[in-house]
Length: 291
Ligand code: SAM
Picture (cartoon, rainbow, N blue to C red):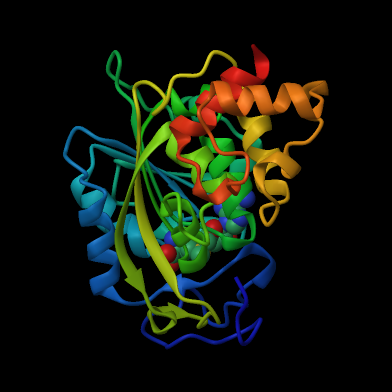
């Protein structure tokens, strides 16, 4: 997330320490609008049975409200300067566990184990975070890996508005792409709210939005070979301005003729572009390509 200053002193009442130097490299834009904090926690549909894993608690703006609603909150923060601030703030809250570490290097199961939290049989965690924008896409992909998504019921995340639009976009949209397909394959996507830059300190240069991603029991479309499906999707969007016939030329060793046959078998016009295909059509086309 781009921001105007890399180091700011935030208001006396709300600052996490006397002169906290925000680290732009860690995507540190802290929420300072209580109505936005409330709307995010409300949108996450937290109840008193829930175990919440919060990614990047910062100085705890969301954590406070989560602690009031959830059975337990495990907050993982990479910046070691924030650990003592968080520990002091949540000292009197036994249902809040503060961990220091990098979410990209941890599995959800490790986080739960490290925090010493017990999940009921079959229980999944709710993940929540005002995400560090510098790793939004790899972080979402990490959380959607099979080992993690099997442990998660919902992800309520604040991301750049532009990324939220891409994730939620449907076929026919200019911003529908491989990220939309990857997320919508595993999740139901709901846009909860847009958030202006004014809600943060320091103020970022981009607008933000909050999405609730509900992990589906089964992927949204049936495919016999997931790797082949995502290969088709990535190859098609890799040259999104080209027709599918040109963008997919040579895929899996197909010559022009056999690729034309695959399009015919999937009932897809080869003159269409990737952004017009539904997930089901990508699945049908992949089946025809690998047959
Ligand atoms: N939740 C706070 C709020 O809303 O005010 C802070 C949100 S700030 C956008 C993102 C937070 O994620 C920062 O506190 C940052 O230090 C932390 N962070 C950045 N990279 C991280 C990582 N790889 N693992 C865990 N936390 C990370």
